[in-house]
Image 1 (cartoon, rainbow, N blue to C red):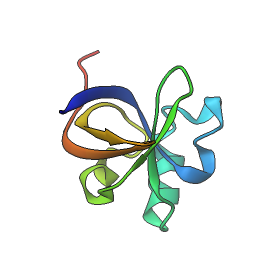
Image 2 (cartoon, one colour; image 1 turned 90 degrees about the horizontal axis):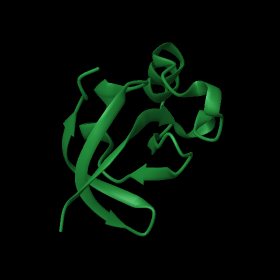
Image 3 (cartoon, helix red, strand yellow; image 1 turned 180 degrees about the vertical axis):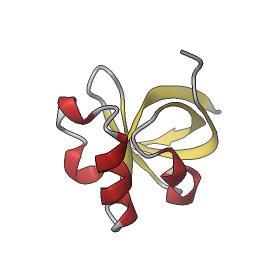
Length: 84
């Protein structure tokens, strides 16, 4: 069953650094050079993304992912940018 997950798409190297949430420039650079994209919630929960191609264009942005969670990895069905 699919669920929604809200957070920021951040590269794996910076995922544990709270100050990197929303740093689009850094996330784009690091994901562009091959670092895996992760979803980091505002509470600090970190999720791996099993299908990277779905999220790369959203590097550094706050998103709502719809997908299936297995362990600590999300298989993404849909990505939406929440209205601010």
